[in-house]
Image (cartoon, rainbow, N blue to C red; front, top):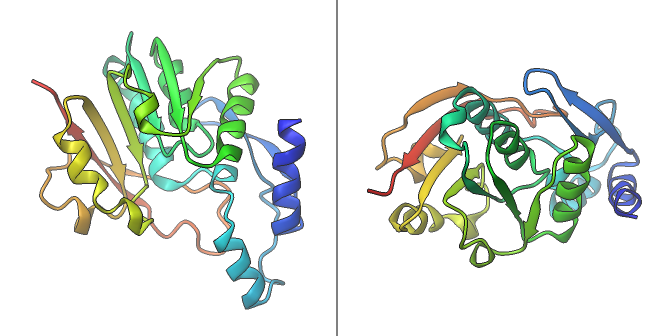
Length: 214
């Protein structure tokens, strides 16, 4: 049922469908929008409709890709920990954390379709995750993983709040130059957007920030 409702959403918006997509470098598979989807035939009204109803879970965005890669390259960061993936989208970062040795992963997103996608993608990879529609429902998480949430103006105060909390945090962001300027990046990676349609991949330089609890 979840796949049917998710597929219907992308069919209505994009006149396309979901496809099982292997992210070779991460060794994880996700149900994402068909890479052959054409946007060129859509007029400005249709493009506006798409952005107003964007199924963010149907894509892997550049910061999420970079953060998943970073976690897999540095498994000690998550090994044995309960982690929370904030703004989970497809659930990629949560799944990467489990693959790297996290004891539990909680995918957090306000979009109920995203939570369905997270569970579907977890099953696709033989993994199990917990889903939640608010950060207040993930108090047991020892480490918060955040990627690419500053595109939404409603989240612009989020960085200050999360960097002040008594919980470890790893944040990946392409828009860090303005909103996270006061913090020192620990790494810089190149991200990818999958599928990359019509310039969706414009933000490739991803900065990784850590907040450690002492």
